[in-house]
Length: 199
Ligand SMILES: C[S@@+](CC[C@H](N)C(=O)[O-])C[C@H]1O[C@@H](n2cnc3c(N)ncnc32)[C@H](O)[C@@H]1O
Image 1 (cartoon, rainbow, N blue to C red):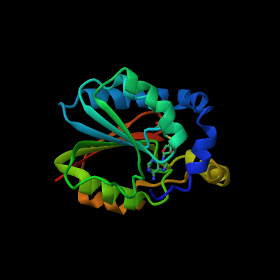
Image 2: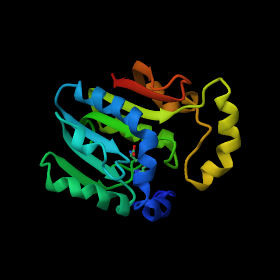
Image 3: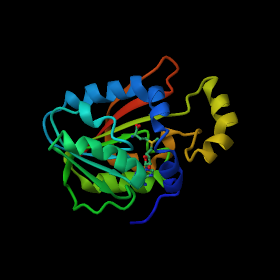
Image 4: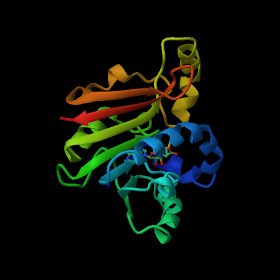
């Protein structure tokens, strides 16, 4: 597997990731509600991390992938309780799945972490079935005072292996998809849940 640049970082922080989770909790709850409202199908979650979402997914057969083995090892505890889950160490930018395999692909807080977001999205397009749904949960730099915070924070964000300045317009590979929903997760329009269809 081609390692991601963030690999060592996530391997190192896997024991502390539980402290970061509360910052994502309310947005992840929106994501889980959205996923559970979708008809049954094969779901791929890229950047599954420590697998916190796994216990909440009700309807789908789940494949979770991550490049950090230490994060995946945390997620593996859910394998004992749920039969509909498989976990694989794999790079989202080089998916080892055949074309048109999944009904859903979920990207929670990973698209601003991967080395090449457009390569990731091209791979997602390839493995999604026609009519399949892509769900992205991420921060996007809004056109308000938060853009200045994003700029100030950017050097620190680089050390933490994510891009704080992040625009949807730079995700050119999304042009292959049709956007079907755009849900703001907070009053500042910072975190968004975006839904796309592969036509
Ligand atoms: C910010 S964490 C998000 C974890 C989880 N999705 C959540 O919402 O709490 C980003 C995760 O993406 C993983 N990751 C980074 N680059 C990746 C890649 N190219 N392919 C798959 N996973 C990747 C990291 O190892 C890490 O576990």
